[in-house]
Image 1 (tube, one colour):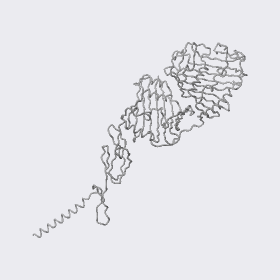
Image 2 (tube, one colour):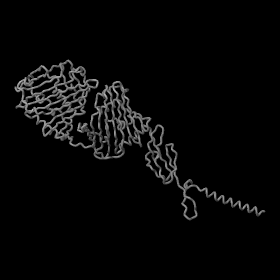
Image 3 (cartoon, helix red, strand yellow):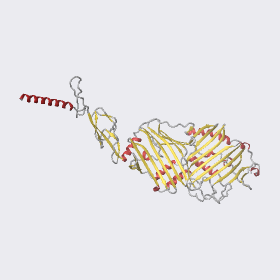
Length: 611
């Protein structure tokens, strides 16, 4: 019996031992799961069946609510999703708590690491993003921009569109290049360019036919990097004191800026673009509470992605919608800027002088002919605003002359049609539309002949003093257009054209000559002296378009043309509505074309024949 008991006990011990051995084998942990596991790999055939554990390290995301991560040794950590913090903008990941070294992802993990999330308040974020996008340490950037304006003023719809791009680079000859195209009645049709080489900024304007319209040069700072006339001053120019606040909008990553820019400043910027100073004046006269403005910026990757300026007006007299949008297409890369080239354009004073002399030689050759004639059409315009009627005049006709020894015999046939007889100008003062002839007879007498349907009136000019004003009526424009800002020579369809840019001073001189030459009252019937451009302030002349064109065919003068558009301050003494000097738009269209009839002209013997 005792033997049987010992046998059963022995079997129980053996069974328990087998159970225990089996349990240890199944309790081996997965490789790498044991803290600090530093296991050597088992050698094949050694009888050691341990599996190598995988070492892991912790990654701590400081300054955030993100949970720590465990990363296998040698594996990489990708850039985490941007964390958020109330009232702040995420500024990036750094490897140190002082935010000196930016983390470069992916990071290979070989030890426990901590990466630090940087946050800015909204104003700090804007300043930092601006510095990262266009700051002094940024070697280059590019941006596109558009300006869309729609105005309804006195039942008129006036649109304006601009589309452009700009480049800045610290590398290469050209440091800044801006080009944009304008369209719509509010803007000057055509394209404009700004090119900075060193400290010299060239400003070039082409008309809608891609012909040179204006050219100027100014000295700027070597760091000039954006269009100073743009609505984006808040991005490029404003310092901390001018940036008052920045708050998030309901759009993702968009923030509204509040700056010290007031409505007056915005109107001034608008005036740099809009081809209607009267619209600008009308807006400027509104109280600031009538003008709603807003500036908005978006961020991406710690840089400015886009900027938008909006202006809206909705009052009884005017409705305006303006949106300026700027989008950065690159930042941080220095590039070699290649601007557009302009062939056939003379820009230096010596080059302009050479082209002037070449054109003047052909004009003077025509003027020196013994017998000559030409047709002319001259249109003038002064516009004080949509609320007032535009004041226009048209002088058209022909002029003939014969040079005999020291005398010039002439016969000028002139039709005058003007608004100066209207109620807001000189109604009932004696100004009227008229068809006249100025003629110097073969005997030397000078007569004015008023052509009427039934009865002609004649008046002899006593004490006549010969001058180009009558001898070469409206011809001698080269002597009254000042020094030209540029010259452009082109040839098309057998005609060589010399185009010359008119300066502000040159246009002032031209308008004085027009006031003297275009006589609205040749018989001196009016009670007040009427001038086509009024008593304008010479220093106020601002040319938007100013060009003199001399066309030559087969070496001979083919035509002379002048186009001027701009602004001026003027008044009309003795008029009804415009005796006080005020700002107005001015226009001049001048065309003079030689005719063959003048080649056989001889002075008339009698007044009857001259009629």
